Length: 230
Image (cartoon, rainbow, N blue to C red; front, side, top):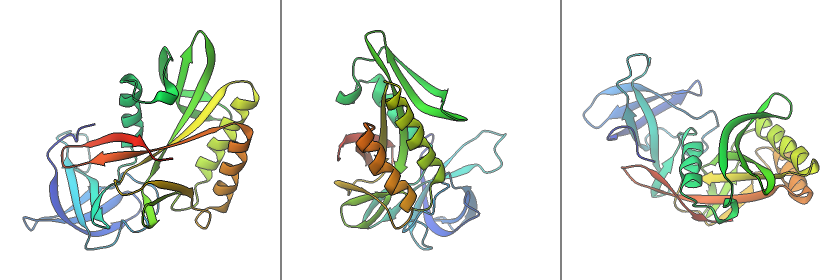
């Protein structure tokens, strides 16, 4: 997945109201940018971090720039939570996942459960459908350990219950965590950030919901899905 425009480098001044951030560009200009991340961004919202923003020429946008990357722990971290679904869509089309080969169609945003939409529904005439939820992950507090979530994630916990119900009905269901950083090789639920999610993840795995964690390659050109880390 390529960034929509060449990235401009700056310094993070502040992230606030969840979806806004102020960035001081290297040319001295200070701008307010869209921060496409509803989470706490623990360790990634510290003023003074190096940051990179893309620019859109869409006249309908209120903010032309989007916060894409920050530098933390010596490496680049993707903070745009819109990217994982795009990355997975590209990877499914390219048959990147050995776990999800053989499905004829990959439908997106299909209604299921109680007022929910699954990220992907994989279907083929010779097998049960696979309900696939995608989660963005970028928290690292212990070197090499990716954790999710970084705050209370009630919606994600609800999704786990929906997947569990699909398995109980005889279908296949999976949750795939996309780690938007390059320095992790392990994964664990962040039970101190959201005990309910951690408990639910353990429960649904025991019920047959599959868990996959994939890392990313990140540079100034874009973000690409890499290999499986858990």
